[in-house]
Image 1 (cartoon, rainbow, N blue to C red):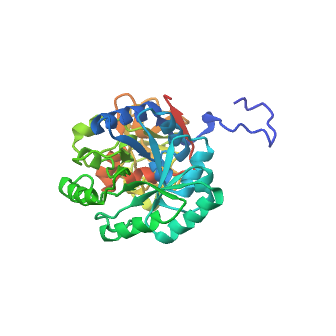
Image 2 (image 1 turned 90 degrees about the horizontal axis):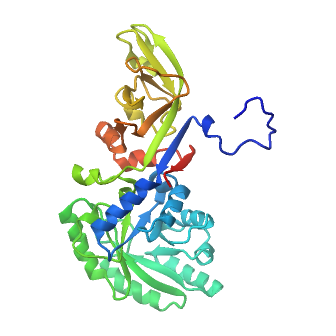
Image 3 (image 1 turned 180 degrees about the vertical axis):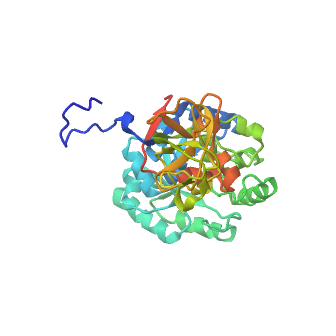
Length: 379
């Protein structure tokens, strides 16, 4: 931007990347790579439904939906609620959308936007039947069965009367039946649930049970596998060899705001959590726990500066963090720091944070603020 150019209050540039102080980069080529890898694991008869709930696990709901809509190895998209489904349909997403959780918006949207929904409650089914009549359109539903998660879903004992009640309604079309794995990474538990799901399966209905981890363990093939964290490049519950076949798609970036020298004995950050044991060069970067840098990394995490690890020193603040750059040459203000992601020879991914904090990659990724910008690279 030319800072001498006059800009009126109504003509600010909508995207000026040079002024971003923190942002997320999504590597579309990594998503395509991961989808192809899962398709190879699943086999050609099982299609991938990409799970984009919770702001696409922190990656950006709209950005990921647009990538998935163009990806040849992803056949459908799953959202947690109707609001998410409406949002992506309004952005032009063409592929099948299935709400796998709950309905939190006017049910009319289901008919207007051609959205499929999970059902496990007959009161809601009756309400959906009225919507179908209103628009003279069949409402497509997938029955959710509880096979051991003890969360949402009808039990096996309730299933037959539940189906019979739905079949009496004129505007409801049962197109699928599914369940959810409680421990998709545990073969014995996953196969126990699979054996129960087999009893729930109905002729001519779409079936889906596997999640990212379960897709590698289940013995039967289903029409769909609902892949969430795996498409983003993570399988932390499996051996490192499988993890190496995936590419984490998200990078989190920030900038150096200020560099200063401090002398031995200087207390740094809130509560003086860190005290310099020598003369040091430190930098303050434009990110904190509000933006998604986990506070549990205070005094023990790292970021990447000039392809080298720079320790986090002191307490991670709400919007700022202090790092030690004493051993890193050629640092300047405004330069880019990698919080999550890879530079030339150095990387930090969500599973590295998990090793320090004992929190899951899901936890770390979904905590990245939805307010900071997302940009798609390598489309």
